[in-house]
Length: 164
Length: 259
Image (tube, rainbow over all chains, first blue to last red; front, side, top):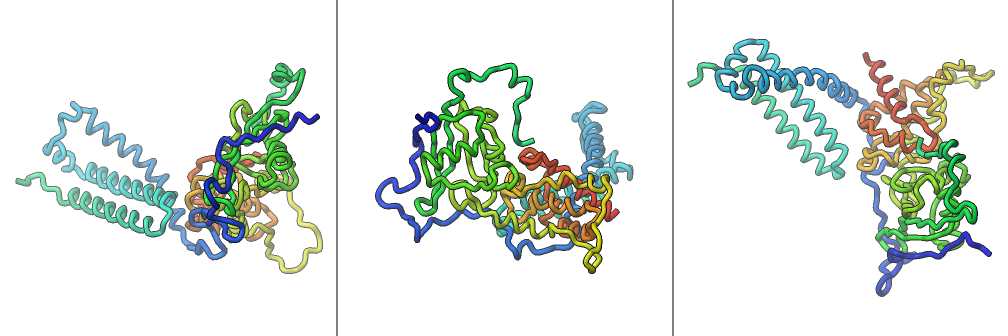
């Protein structure tokens, strides 16, 4: 007596024709669902550059510097000396009178924007499967990054406290 | 380690329920079936069988194939954790069916068995391994030496030098790590953990002379820098290789080479 084989119970409808004839048979199999961007003998093309390595290093180094810059920035802007209520045109003008804070803010702007842009670039590379989608998303990303960096830099350098 | 094992102390202390009369329990195996000759859709199919929980998932698959449904398709060769043919996603984790005991994966609930992810499913649990092996071939997984003459004596190596890459020699190319990697799921162009592990095995081998060349290959856009240190590969490896650590060591070698 064999007691080690049980009965099969198909709770899900088994594969095969459910109603009428199946669309597919041995000579005419269904299309396979290909894995995204499969590696083949010809792809990927060798890039032979250090860009990705420098990108990776930059993320780590800028991250460490940003911890200091951003936490310091938050502390000054939001906690010390009466917190948010003190922030006004005069406060910003006062800080940007000193080159130290100009450099601080400039560095924070550049590092944060490049760090964030590189992070998003990685996310797009990881998640956008179609080449067109990647291209458009990255184009949008780079445009926004360049615009913000240039505008911010311009403001820091051309800031006029006596503006009317 | 991917395959959990029962502590010896636990096993000695508690008898398994119903052990005295019969070792068999009823377990449900929920298997992802796909047959392109019948349907374009993959479906879950449940099989109930009475089985000794101390048996392996592979034994259950054999019982299903031999006694219940001969059309169930899966790969296995040695059935003892060496050939690396039967990596599959069992209860949502990549494991070798031949190294996973049923009692270790809670047979009270249906046990799901799926093909590994990120590779094209050909039928049921069988996937197209070609992209995986292409990545493996691309890292030159063989000894390369500068000398052109045939060696007249064996290449000696100190125990320390051998120890340097010992962990990565254990790889059986089952693809459990690569197909557990979220970067690989979305972009098959990434080398994947298995290829990097096998590059590591030669990069850090003192007898090999092409380490520089392999590092250059892995420095590419789709090389080690795409690793997000998710540790899925280390969790999935049925041989207990510290895969993520090996990848990080390759990254470190690339950086120290430059600076």
